[in-house]
Length: 401
Image (cartoon, rainbow, N blue to C red; front, side, top):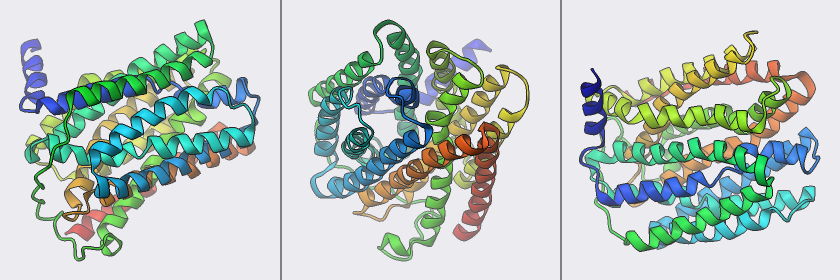
């Protein structure tokens, strides 16, 4: 049984190019350093003494910067290429994160986080397009999953390490390490990866029926973007209201919060790649997988209102992690496969912009609901929004047919 499990795990990684492995390492270095993000709401309320509505506005600025950065990243990727965009995004983000610790006013922090995310998230469309260059067409979903694996492995180390740093060095240490790891990632990037042209992937039959070269006339893709928006809206609660819920309601320390959030990344590291490998082999429809993942998202929020003590936090994290493993790789894969030739950057930008747009409204909405009605109301709201995304995914499947 153990040998068979190990074989399945090894087979799921077989055939990926060396460049993809290097890109995964760079992503891991970068993501392990973004330990500021899970603790940002705690930092703003505890150290800078901002109110929950103020934190909501700052997180909205975070999302607005991400939205603008995703759009710029798509435009720049199509114009100057993915390689230059990735290089300058990582380099500048490193220095900007280091400087963020010196901003202590509400308006100053709003402007600073907006600028940082604008620069940082130009990276996202570029890395998706780079998979076309560094991966064979038939390996793109698995290559994407490996990148996500690196992100989640970094996420496993990041919050736990961040909790230890806060306990030992305080919050300023987070900003220094975050910035330094971005700069370290770009040193590795420049050393091991070259700028490479890519061969365009053939579309699957139901994904290639784009009626116009204009993305604005691609109706199924806009339904898909609405699903991505709702998915991001609910998922981003993990980085805004959820840490406050862990601390204020269940009394967890920063280290315990880091450990709980690391559970998400650790489970994805151990199980996502074999799971995706199996699902790809079974040739299950991507939209059907997304449908079931969104049901799991809804369940993960509804379960938080069951009075089971701190054990409910683990149960909720397990459920949303399974949903995330199913949803994120296949939404990425659908967006890449749907892209019109020559406009891959724009399609991936719209995909990442949908997530970024959700961040603008997610944190502010969550903070306001918690401030006025409490955490229970917020979890019910997120559960029902996930169910709305389930209905949209059923509509998308019908539209593609």
